[in-house]
Image 1 (cartoon, rainbow, N blue to C red):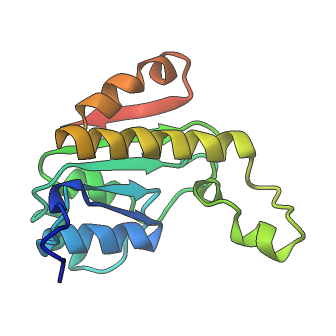
Image 2 (cartoon, rainbow, N blue to C red):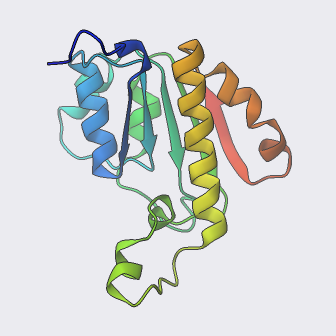
Length: 162
């Protein structure tokens, strides 16, 4: 339940890894939100494609570099969400770069050899741009346009949208 003073057109659901799957299912089930941001989502379950096909809100998928750390069934999201999805991969990023600090860093005196501050900032910047785009326009257009320089310098790759 959401208080009537809350503007649901400004709520953005965000999830990392299997949390990305949870966001997708919530959107498919009609969660009141302007859209979702999936941070290197991972997918399991035979029913997930059925949920993904029901999503009718804009979704941005910000993924790690599959050459560095492939995520289980990440391709499901772009494949099965019928429209309103955009996806980019961040060159050189590991799955753990999405979170700061990483679980490994928390358990290892701040040291995680698989993550870098630069890549973590890249994820945060893309997340912020997408959130602003969704809350101000209800679309991914502003975010997509703001990524232009990052597409050109090759930091973002595998960019696609439908």
